[in-house]
Amino acid sequence: GIVRFITDELKMYGAGSYVLSFKAKANEAGQFRTRGYYDSETVASNVFQTHTSDITTSWNTYTLTLEITEDILKGDIIFFKLDSGEKVFDRIYFTDIALTKK
Image (cartoon, rainbow, N blue to C red):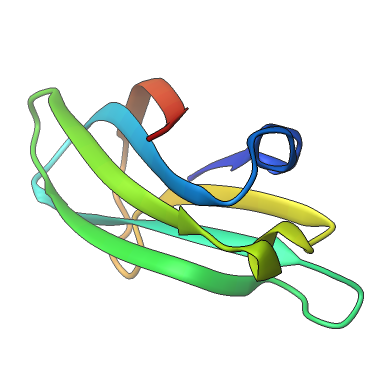
C-alpha cells in the first residue's frame, strides 16, 4: 500500500472537510480500502475514517471526503493509507493523489 503523511498540511489549514482524490487500478478486479489514521502519545494508529472501494484493471478516479476534527489535529502524526485490505493483489497502482480543503 501507500502511506502519505498529511500532518503539516492539516495543521496549516485546520479542521474541516477535505477531498482526497486519486486514480487507481489493479492487475485484477477486487476491492481496496482507504484509511485515515492519527497517532499521539496516548493513542497509536487510531483510525478516524475507513472507506472501501471497488477497483478494476482500468484507471478510475476516486474521490473521498475526509472529516478532520480538532481532536484529530491534536495527533502528532496524521496520515492516510491506501491498501488492498484483506485481498492480496499482485499489483495495485495509484497516481495523481491530491488533498484539497473544501
